[in-house]
Image (tube, rainbow, N blue to C red; front, top):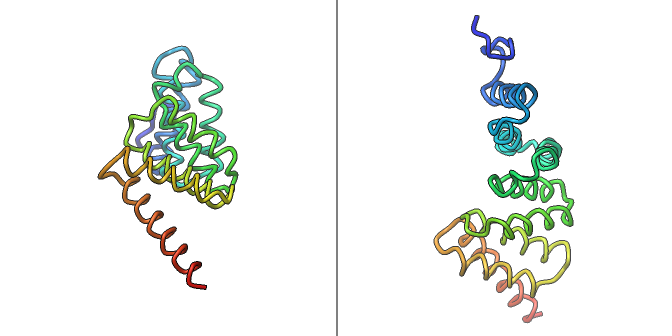
Length: 169
């Protein structure tokens, strides 16, 4: 049977678990190596792909605490933590992470999705339709032809439709 560097039989675990074990091994055995930083941040990416939100928060925040200087090289982890908090309905923490992501990495395409999430947080959590509209417009105008642009367009249309219905009653 095949074993990975940690001694675990590779056929016994799904690929994402094997990758997580390998990343964790690198972090534990070689904590000062550049690959350790990347590995710790990638654990949160794996968990985000699985939608394991509680662990995304736990591992992502631990990676940032352990290697804070690497945050700017791997800002996607901030986005993943923001997304996890959003689905865990901790909107204040979600907002904080999305804003930090945009502060250090607004040029990435997923910045449009961060803005849409900020719009949704404004709309659903803060009950501030004006602020939500501003975030949706930033996503739409700042990132044309992206997933965030499409979602922002849908959100804006939904908002217009709701306003029309309310004005007729």
